[in-house]
Image (tube, rainbow, N blue to C red):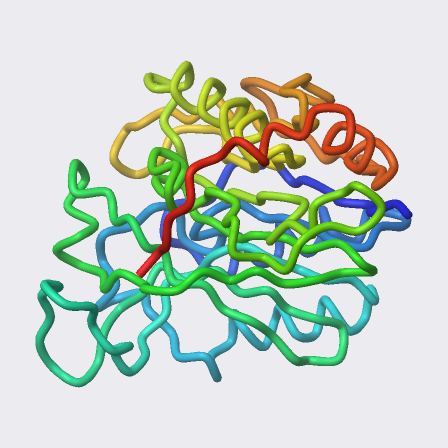
Length: 280
């Protein structure tokens, strides 16, 4: 069983939705065949801290664009947008006010118009993202053709517990653990000045969770003068780099193989020695 995933590493026009959607549509149209297309974080605007000016609802033009593209190309399309929505229930100790919040929301759009959402859990306080957006409080683990995929956004990558495979799953079949997920996807606007952390953490998440990891980052300089070097990567369950591209736009389609994943998990059953825990 295989899974085709296409990564679009691109420059983004600062806070210009129409230009970004037109650019990305052209790039998506150039992909001859794939199952999943992954776009960067805040792909319609860049990493902006002006949600009051740029946010859309789930009925807005950018989500409708995703629906139209996914249906026409018969693909799953994913990436994050600035969304205005009713605030999700807060966890104990979390702060929040008002009836409506802004979210850095990843959307997992299916060809039939149905979708899943993931609101970025860890907001980047260093850039004051936590003062503009509301954090999510639940993970999105979705499925494609027998594969399970865990979706994350940028800064989430620094927090291993949020990505950690749980031991609470039912068990194993044919010696292979019935894991929570097989692929971790992270969409980002990760600055080049911290690229070492990005690349290292992507490999770490693959090794510790015995899964494939797909990291899609942007390139170019944003409206705040911050340069992004891309470094989009695909990593196998042993931490080996299957794809890496720095400092230039690129579109790549890579095929992941379930037999490779099962082989690693069977030959190296390190999960049996892991600590039990819960995520709340």
